[in-house]
Image 1 (cartoon, helix red, strand yellow):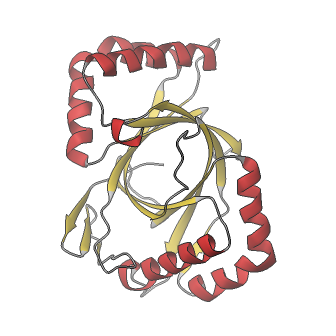
Image 2: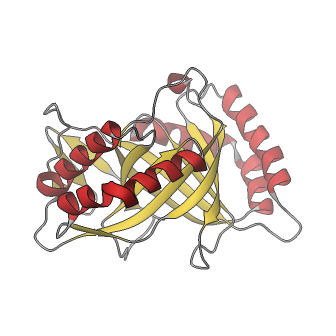
Length: 259
C-alpha cells in the first residue's frame, strides 16, 4: 500500500500520475477526495501491541498539546491475509484536506521526533504512502461510533479503454445504492495511489468497512446469494479486483469533526 496527491478541479480529479477523470455523485456534483496516509511496520523482537499502545498514548498527548483537531487514525492488524502482507501493523490516518494533513505532518517533523524514535524502536516503518480517497457509501451514523471495525482492501484494475469517471464511478454509485437497498451497513471507498510508491500493479483500491465481522458476513451472504448477479451486471468487462485482505482496526484518534 503506497502513493497520493490529487487536485480537485471543477467536475474532475487530476491525479499526480496525470490520470484525468470526471467524477460526479448521483446528484451531479463533483465528488471531493480526502487524503489518507498509510504506514506499515513490523515489530522488533520483544516488542508488541502493548508497547505500541503506550507510545500511541504519547502521540495523542502530543497532538492534544499541539492543538491538532483535524486528524483521525486507526491501527490495523491482519485477519484474512497471507505471506504477501509482510508487516504486523498498518497505521491509517487522514485529515479533511491535503493542506491540513501537511500542516500536521510539518508539526510532527518539527516537534514529534522523540515520540517518532519510540515508534521506530518498537515497530520500524517499512513503507509510508498516501492515497486520494473517494467515499461512495457512508456507514450508518451513530451517536457512539465504534472503536473497533473491520476494513477490507482489494486491488482493482480497469479494462483497456475504460474510464473511471465515465464508466466505473457511475457503476460504483449504482452499486452503493443497491447495497443500501439490501440493508448493507458497510461503507465503500476508492483509494487512488499517488505518493510513496511507483510501479503499482493496480489502478485503485476498493475498500469496505463494517462495524464487525458479523455485519461483514451478512454482506458476504447477500453477495453470494444475489449480489454477485448485480455486480456482474455493473462491473463485468470494466473492472477486475483481486480477493480482499481483511484487517481488524482499532481507533487511535478521532478528528473533532468526526466526534
